[in-house]
Image (cartoon, rainbow, N blue to C red):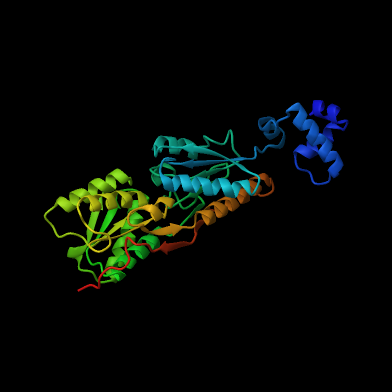
Length: 340
C-alpha cells in the first residue's frame, strides 16, 4: 500500500480506506487510487488482513459430495447468499467420511475461515457429546449431531409424508419407499412414508420398504430392477428418498417396459435441476435452498458477533430451524387412471 500511496500521491491510510470500501472517500481520490492500484497490479493480501482484523472474510462450507447434484446446488445457493454479504466461501468435500466430519467439527477449518457451515452425513451424535464448539458453526440439512448445535433444514418427515400422500392421492396403493438405511435422513424419510401410509389406512401388506446403501442413481436402478424381477405384486408407486435414486428408478422402469405414470407413479425429494428433464419429468419436493443458505449465514454471523463480545461469553443455544419446502408436481405422477 505504501507503493500505491506514493504512486497516487495520497496517504497510506487513504489507500487502506479505498481498498476496504470505506464510504467517506471523494470520488476523485477514489478514482486516482484505483487507477494506481490497477497500474501497479495491487492485490489485497487477505491473510495479512485477517491477522490484523481477527477476521478473514471467509466462511467454510463442508458437504459430503460435490458430484451429487443436491449438494452442488446447495453450495451454489450458499456462495450466492454469501457474495451478497461480501463473504467468500471455501468449499470442502468430506466424502461422507465420519473421521473427516469429526475433524471439521473439532475446528479443522477454522484456521482459514471465520465460521463453518456443515452438512454432515455419517457422524453419529454419540461421538460428538454435548460440548459447544468454540467457533461459529451451523449445521445444514436433516442429519443431526446433537440438538445443542444450531441447524437449518426442512422438516424431513413432513416432506416425505407430503410426497407419499401425493402418490396416494393419485390412486396408488402399493407404494415402495426406496432408500431406507440407518442414516438420520433415511430414518426420517421412512417415518414420513409410514405416517402417510397409516393416515391413508393402506393395508400393511401393501407397504414396501426397499433398503439401499447409498442414495445414488446406480443404487436406485439396481434396487428397482431387482424388485421388478421378483415374484411379488408390482408396486404402483415409488417414493424415492432423493432425486438421484428416482433417476435410477425411472431408468429401470423404462428398461423393463413399465410405463410411468400409467403403471407406476414416481415422486422424490430434492428437486434438483435434472428433475425437470428426466423422462418423464420427475415430481419432487423442493427445499428452499436460498432460504436455507440465508438463514444459516444469519445464524453464523449472530454467533460471530456473540463470540466477539467479551462481556457475554456464554455459548449461543442451539436452534433447530425448519425452512419452507413445496411439492413440484410433474408428469411422473400426473394423470393416472382412477383407482379401481
